[in-house]
Image 1 (cartoon, helix red, strand yellow):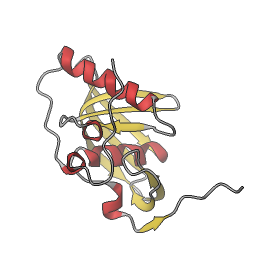
Image 2 (cartoon, rainbow, N blue to C red; image 1 turned 45 degrees about the vertical axis):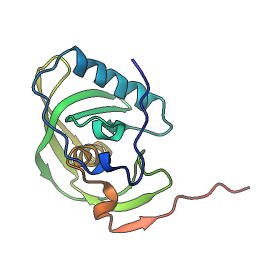
Image 3 (cartoon, one colour; image 1 turned 180 degrees about the horizontal axis):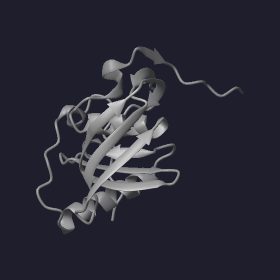
Length: 156
């Protein structure tokens, strides 16, 4: 397992559409482990999409609170409601934006054992899923931020 370099700002990998994973083999499992190691090596990271580390496969890892997930070929199959969110991204350090996301989403994916899972979450986790799954299509949160915000600076 390894920590991979996170792609930043105008890196072309962030704008590429990831390809479906045909088979969950040892290579895919290693990629998921590397992605989780990379996520754990960051400050304030909750999730990571594969193209953020230069991999054009539909893979996402999430480690937020009680949720530790490795997802293969995730897609949103249902959404409802609306919430205003403040978002940031490991690939855009120092940038924050206000977005409007669904309040609740249901994601269909395969887990690392190849089993189909259906996950319904609301609030911050719904935002997280929307954010990461958009990465897999080459879309970043800044593309549809309704307002760009500057992070608060620490007082001296």
